Amino acid sequence: MNKTVNQLSTNEFETLIERAVDKRLEAWMTQLMDALTSIDEPASELRPDFAESLRKAIKQSQASEGMDLKSFRDEMEG
Image (cartoon, rainbow, N blue to C red; front, top):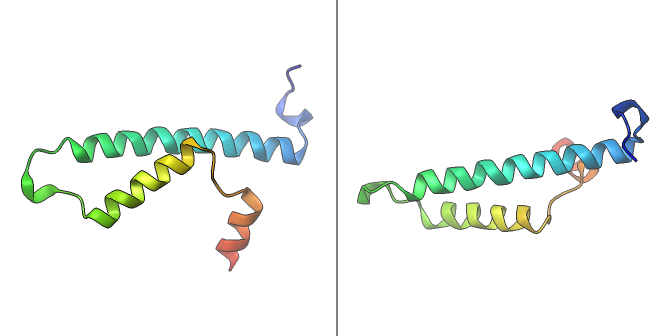
């Protein structure tokens, strides 16, 4: 059954937003990696630690190993 936004619980709404953001970030990071790895100049190689960080973030996004919104807020408020 489809619901309108105002019919969603807070948890359902946050989950919906988290999934949308995860998918958008996954697409953006894939595009970024494609753009950065398609550069042919030898001097423009990615730093290995940066490239590994991007690969890890893409894998986590694909596996939905993210952070829930409350944990993110808690970490940001630190």
